Image (cartoon, rainbow, N blue to C red; front, side, top):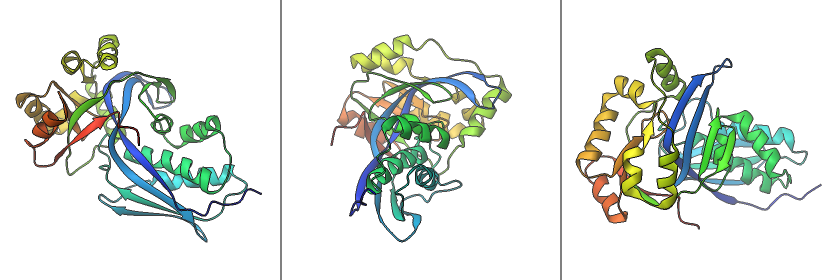
Length: 285
């Protein structure tokens, strides 16, 4: 039997943004076939795990978790796969907005899998962890990775992508948009599929913000903006105050403005009541 780590183990669960989100079709299983470029950002939840007499998840910090707690789902899934699993306290300090299109729940689940694998000494290899992650949620496999990923299928097919460092202004809202709603609205409205992302991928890799800004896109924007016009207004406002480009992340509600540099990101964020500058990908610890 592998000895338990003395703990606590601390892991950062980084939020993600979608530089593009292309919806191809609704699949027979109810999911949607997509293509997306996902990149982690500096905004992160903090996950701490330590031995305990039973398995539980405790949330503190900012927004409380609503609905299904993916970190708990991840912990239970790993416990099933780990003969040496015991009790554990998983503490989550929330900084990522819930249902904000930033993958916060998926990031927490991915970080919990990694941290408990170490705490319990499970020795579950990366490929097996990714299989568990795929069962938990569509975004979780990508959140298991350390860098930008080109995502396809329903989120389970991954390929590493090159993305230079960019600064953004992240505009937050006091409500979330559920991913199933965003995709359902895309179906209802007969929304279109976006363009070939090749120019965007080239600009993202080259570090060319002037070229990247105009080609950012998200196919869920029209149906979501139709129901939440304040998100569309935020995108317009970002462009008015000088963003190189702007895009909604995931199904919303977060909207991002691309900046020239860190100072410009702070300037863009200052035009909103609830916004902050972020970096993508985040600097190495």
